[in-house]
Amino acid sequence: MPVISSHPLTTGCPPTWASAWGQDPFGPWLTLCVEKVEQRLRWIPPGRFWMGSPADDRESLDDERPRHQVQFTRGFWLFDTPCSQALWQAVMRANPSRFKGEDHPVEGVSWEDCQEFMVNLNKYFSGLDSRLSTEAEWEYACRAGTETPRYAEKLDAIAWYDKNSKGQTHAVKQKQSNAWGLYDMLGNVAEWCHDGRRPYATASVVDPLGPTEAGAHRAIRGGDWHWDARGVRAAFRNGSVPGYRADFFGFRCASSGAEQG
Image 1 (cartoon, rainbow, N blue to C red):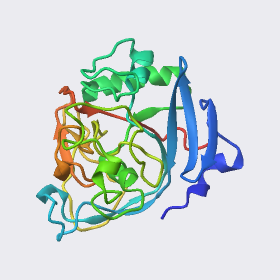
Image 2 (cartoon, one colour):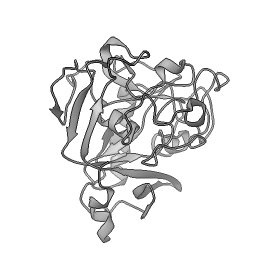
Image 3 (cartoon, rainbow, N blue to C red):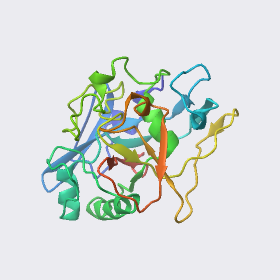
C-alpha cells in the first residue's frame, strides 16, 4: 500500500487554491470552492498496482488482459466524487443533465465538454491545472490497493447499477467509499478519461498513456446506473469518440499541477 504521508500537505504546505485542507483516516484532502459550491479532492500517492484482470477471472473480458504491473512516479489529486451538477452549473452556467439534482453527478457531457469545463475551472484557481485522469490512473485510484474485481465484495454497498438504480442517477456520496476516500468510482455515471485504451501486454510499464491524438477514442471507466454487474468492475473498459454525449457519461477531475504545496 502506498504511503499517504509523503505529500507536502502533511508538513503544512497546501496548494494556494485550496480553501480548506486536512488529513483523516483516508489520507490528505483539499477543498476547492466555486461560488459556495465545494468539492473535496483526495491525494492519490505514487506507487505500483496490478492493472487489468487475471486469467482466472470469469467476469473478465479480452481487452482487460493480460494483467500487468503499472508504476506511477508521481501522485495526483482527484475529486472524491464525480463532478456534481451544482459544480458544473457554477462553472458553466448551464446544466445538460437528464436526471436533475444539484448533488447528482452531471451527465450528458462529452469528453470535449469536459475539456471546456476544466479550462473554465482553471481560470478560478492559479496552479490547479485540472485534467482528466489517465485510464491507468483511474483504475489505480479505483482499486485503492485492492486486487479484487471491485473494491468491496458487496456491489450494492458501493455502486448504483442496473439492479438498484431504478433507472436513473443518484446523489453522489450515498454509497460506501473505497479505502482512499473516493465515492462512486463504480456505478452511477461512467467516467471519461484523458486518454484512449492502449493494448495490454505482460511487461510492466511506468506512467502509461493511451492514444491522445485529436479525435482519438477516449476511455470511459466505472460502469453506470444502467450497466449490469459485469460492467461495474475496476478493470472493465469502455470507450467512445470525444464528441459523444449520453445520460450515463460523467467525469471527475484530477490535478497534478498541485503536487507541490
